[in-house]
Image (cartoon, rainbow, N blue to C red; front, side, top):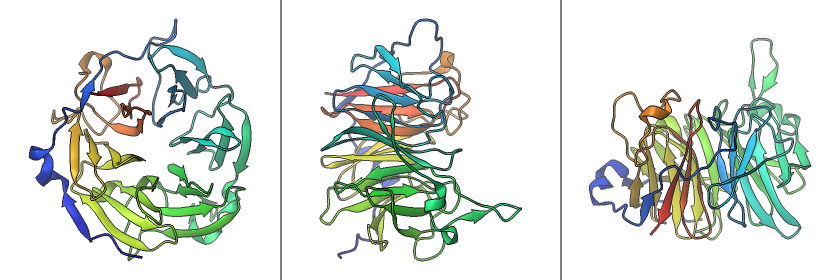
Length: 322
């Protein structure tokens, strides 16, 4: 397999030439349900269904995943959805449309129908102990942070808050292989979230190595292919659509990269000291054109961009494609 060039582009060097005019921030587009003053404490993700409905996760036990229409109006709470979805995706498949996501606290992986029914659960025990961390009592654990699903149904799940291993399962939940980690040749720091990069043949994994400030490519057999972009503002979330990879940077930016890793646009760039990389900024200080701590990103079918923040009040941005 042909490897990616070791470092393709330094994002910081390209910011001045990037154009963000293709997307425009839409203020106050989300309409909360009556009686709910805030979206809720968010440390999760966002995804858009084939109908254009927007699914947002919160840490509310009674509203772990909230569903909004394409117009931003509240539709429903997703029945029985967990309140610890850290990362999830929506996939339309031959037998239906499903949410796939790892639970950060529950340490398992769920496949749910869009009405909240559990279709499949993959327990942490499906991951071999050799790829897990141990607590002070010698008990193994994982801290799963993100995942994606390949066109053939294989699942790729990352243990971003523990070992930075990527775990591959088949469509039935059977473990196939684990790769990555913090040792060479990967040298991952916090491999926070990942996506299946279908822009290449064969497909590969594109991943956010957050504390190393870089986005990387890894082959589905585990080979490290190289760095796609570096010097980002702590990339925390990623998704792929068409020719583009969309990257949410938790220290205050959202970047659109092309297939070569070149910066196409940078949205919401926030340089205000104290406003980025934390979940404390209160609504009174929010500005629609500036992000604070992007933690989940998604496209809809027409290419509009949605950004879920790491924020204790709950905040979702929308940038409409022009």
